[in-house]
Image (cartoon, rainbow, N blue to C red; front, side):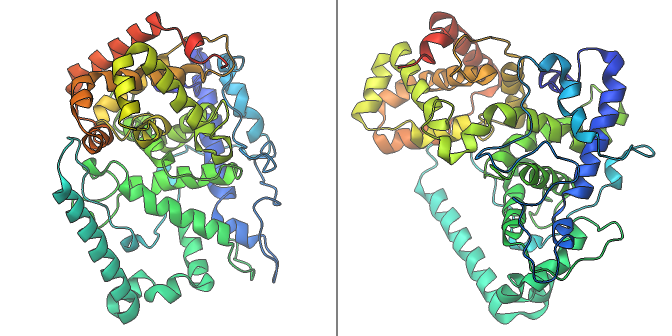
Length: 446
């Protein structure tokens, strides 16, 4: 419940919870119904190509594709206290919910899953050597060879996977899959051609989800062959978010943000059982709230701006230069650029560097960070993320000073797991850094 409150999904007054939850969960259900890829094609006329940028979305008139990075209305400081109103206007054209809403009533996404096998679990410890990299490359080559072989030979496996590459990429074949992704509610597909944008989007989402949280076998079974119902839920969340936000669409890394949140909502033991069936809808709106604050990290055109990812990386460099000049100078001499590792650290909120329970601990702090900033260039609560990253670098101080360039890159890309106690130490040091070097000094105009 805490994340739902901190991210503005739930209002402060518990008296409004039932109403707000009912409205928003019904709204998400309407998104599943109205923004599915199949419905896009059903609107087309024979010979007319569907365009997501020109089509009006039936329950989302407030969204616009004209902006280069349009998104759901962010939870600004002025609207967090009345978060129930920030999305209630979107449901004005949605029909009232009938009956008790349940995630089991939502459709699933039986996409061609064998094309995207789950990768082996990543190692958290650094310095595993070139042997693991070689094994990984060999595995990838074997998978590519098997896929090519299956495409050429067809056969029983080829029939299950789409009877070869040519048929997989055939619009008519993909069109036959679309009604299975989101059932058509009694409507019939039109005769229009396949929307290439939506095909690409759907494939990208379905490709990345099985790779998420690989250590937990949460989206795939223990053998990495089949998928679980959670795969379908997260794929729906990502696709619908991208459909509502065509300016930014889907970018790899978004899956790393929504997955831990959905995982927690599914396994949350602090709430009644009646909350668990709504984990998908709740995760969607909480993910949307996060993206309202960090969406610019995923917008390439804003990389170098004061709200883009490269600006955040430059702030990390400035902070380390002041906090530990020796380490900063050493990295400069070795030409160890912050982009090599900090791009991933910041863009996915450190979700790939820690185990799931440690991610929860770090995100607790990030979401609860109530610091207000006088400078508009600071990225609200997530400015504290820069301090956490700086503390992580300082924790590896001795190894970085002694190590060579290649060793240090591996060390930072495979941040050694510090354990629960170590995470608390990093967070404490990050807090001390912010007290010593205020946010306004780091995020000031230069």
